[in-house]
Image 1 (tube, rainbow, N blue to C red):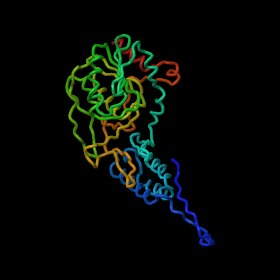
Image 2 (cartoon, rainbow, N blue to C red):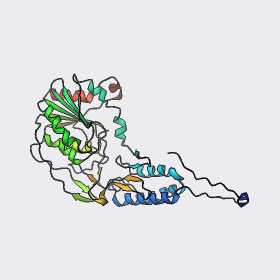
Image 3 (cartoon, helix red, strand yellow):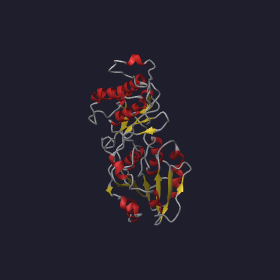
Image 4 (tube, rainbow, N blue to C red):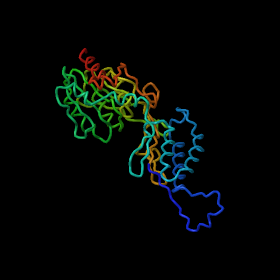
Length: 341
């Protein structure tokens, strides 16, 4: 971010003679301090994982207040970035004045796997063109051997609520089905339910959810038609994140589902749009927006998603060299697994 420095030109030179220390107040310094205080306090009040991550939040106060006082104008963005990065949370972000979302932290597993999936390599395994939904949130087709395949791009808005029934209708007579969630995903529980509901024939409880430290009841997932009863493989890697991880964890409870690939990124923070104090979006005095999660999901075994992620049932790693050579080992393993059933 380009630094904005407010220059003060002295007209009366005589007033400068003999001055050894001249202090020019940084641009917007009062506003920056107000933003820092609001950010620090918001995290202190609502962020659920300070203790879990063993973060001494009190110790950050003096360090970042001093940096804020020294920051000139837009230099405060770097201070804000570094302060938020202390949380080591892939959900946390802030918006610049231009509207860009800046994520100060990405999980290491994301960096490990971000080049070990390639949609063009996936397409090479089909003898038909993949069908892309109107929203672009999913694409699907039938592989040779009558193996169904659907790639879920994200769980945002209400796209899957409206589009997944059409997808599962198209794939319902396949021998087996691959659900590919190998990229960073976010979204809402409603879209997760829209997927999971077609693979259960009785209601299924959600993992436990906490908001501002209190347990929140979520109605069980109800089955929907058509019901897909054949074997399913869910493909995951370190770039599978957030709602993609919750969807994987729920599907993993089903006897028909096998999860294949590598451990997910580990992003378990959530928030609520219905309760004002529990909103993730928080506006600072200057109007800048930060996103700080106020709640979280636990896995069914009681461990949090955050940092832990979801381990696969079958560990299969892609390599960058194989992807460059047009080989998707995870996809090939999934196809062979389903053909053997």
